[in-house]
Length: 315
Figure 1 (tube, helix red, strand yellow):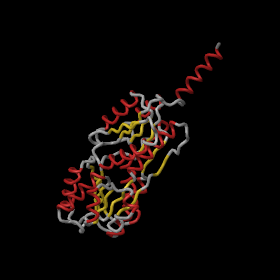
Figure 2 (cartoon, one colour):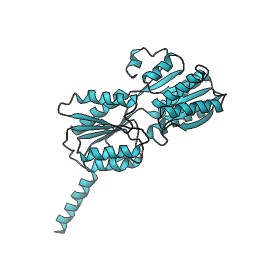
Figure 3 (cartoon, rainbow, N blue to C red):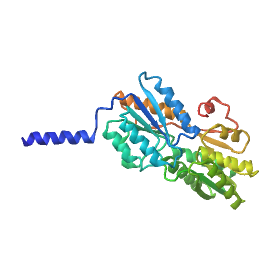
Figure 4 (tube, rainbow, N blue to C red):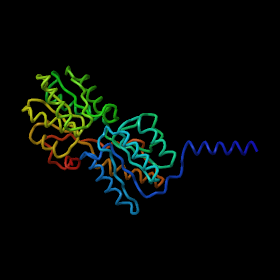
């Protein structure tokens, strides 16, 4: 009798430790940091393109009104779990806050694919794959491109977005490390826009006014870089300040074309959505997938903006 009870306990523990059977729903929940940015809408397009390869399945795309609304994103994941979705593709807006709901998805046998930003190590076992730009590498590339254009001395401001987000930590960390390793540039900031374009615009105007000797500036995501670009243009400093942005919406492309920005590092946002859905469908089908997948960046300048390589990532 004791052996039977012990065997049942071990079986229960194994089930709790490693859920095997996935949920049998037909909805794939794609939950991003905010629905109000072209970058994430391009992720949506990729997800909707991928789901067409899987008749009977649908994509439900959601995101909070702002990236700083972390609690709203947590609730969206909770609701997806309660709806018993077939799988979740998630861009976590906070590395720690999303871990409990990631665990809940795992406990409910719902496969979870992360895109764009990582979770803290506590959440590692709760997702099957993480698809993203190598943000440290991308940040270093932006710093390298900036140094090529402005030299190894002077003052550079870092305009960042939401502190503590996985992509921000890697991107700004990589940029900062490269600057310190390869130049004598003085760094001002980082300053955080909370991914609000208007906030970034006002911050940039204030920083340029407070630092009239500013030689360079880095805008670390789409709304931040666009606000930065508008501030440079409004201040009449286009071309006088070496400005590098991140992401590739139409506004940022226009700034590259007119010389306000010297270049933009553009992620494969469409690819994140497309490959995110493809990867979660592979997991549902019982196939093994890599734990990490690099979706890459293209550095776009006035010289290559009309090439096929650039057009494949711009949006």
